[in-house]
Image (cartoon, rainbow, N blue to C red; front, side, top):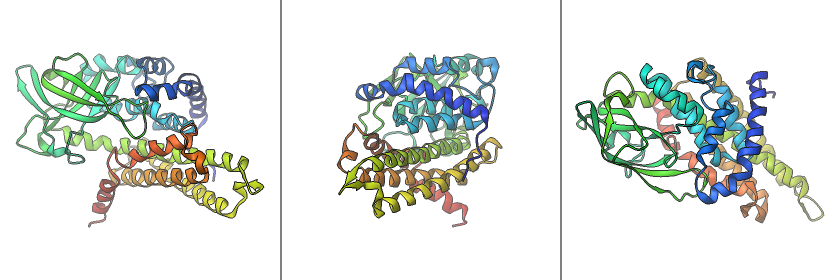
Length: 383
C-alpha cells in the first residue's frame, strides 16, 4: 500500500539529509562508536545545513514550519543506514528537547537560547531519570531551593542522552520537596555553572556512538530566569504534555529500524546460498520475511496516522503509548528474526544487523518502558 504521508518538500529534504548522512555520519560511525561520542561539530554542520530547529520561528534562525514530517524523515534516514546511535543526539535535540523551548520558554529565554540551538552551537539534553527511581519521577530527590534571584540545585541524574556534549540541560527538580507531582519544576542548567559536574560516559550494550552520562549538582546556583514556565510546580504537567511527541519519535525510529532490518535481510538472503540455492528461496525464509513485511507495513500506517494527528494537535498520550509500545516491540522481534536469517554472519559486528540488534534493546525501556505504556493504555480502558 502506497504511503501518502510525504509531499515533494519532504522528499527534497530527505534527499538533502541522505547526502548529509552519507558524507558526515556514515563514514565516521564506527570511529565514534569506539570513542563513545559524536563530535560537537556534527551538530554545527547539521545546523548549517538546516537540519536543526525546522519548527523554530525564522526570527531565531529556524525553518519556521511546525511539521513533524521533517523530523520523521531525519529518523528514517538515520535508521535506513544503521546510524541511529550516532544520530540519536540530533533527534533528541529536535524531537524531545526543542518542544520545551518552543512551548514553555518566555520571549527572553527564546531570544537567549533558540539561535544557538538552531545553529548547533548549543547542544541540548533533558534530565529526568535519577539513580534508583526508574519510571517513578515523582519520587525524584534533586532539589532546587530558592535563594534570592537564584535556585540552589543539589542532586544527581543518570542515563542522560547528550550528557557529555550538552550545553543546555532541561532538569527536573523539586522546588517543593514536600509535594510529589505538584512540587516538580523544570530548570535549564547551563554548561560551566559551578557545581554542575558530568560523570562517566556510560558503557552501554548498544548505541555506542551516543554519549550517555551521569550528571551531578552540588550547590549549583541557577538564575530564576532559567525556570521554564510561568511559575514553580508545573514541571510534571510540562513533561506529560510533551511525552506524546517523544514517544512518537521513538515509534518512528522503531518501525524505520524494522524496515531497515528487513531490507538488509532481503538483500542478504537473495545472495547467500546453501544447498545449492539462495537461502531466501526456502519456504521458512519466505514465510518469516512475509510475516515481517506485513507487520512493518501495518505498523507504518498507524505511525503515519499518529504523525498526522500530532501535526493537527490531536495526538494524545494513549495513542502515542500504543505507537511506542507496538513499534519498539516490533523492532526487537524483527531485528532478532532477521539476525537469525543471517546465520553466523549476523553475529558479526561488521554486519549492520548485529549492531541493530544491540541498539534495539533499549528502545523498549527509554521514553517509558513497555510496561508503563501498557499501564497508560489499560487505564484508558477504564481498568
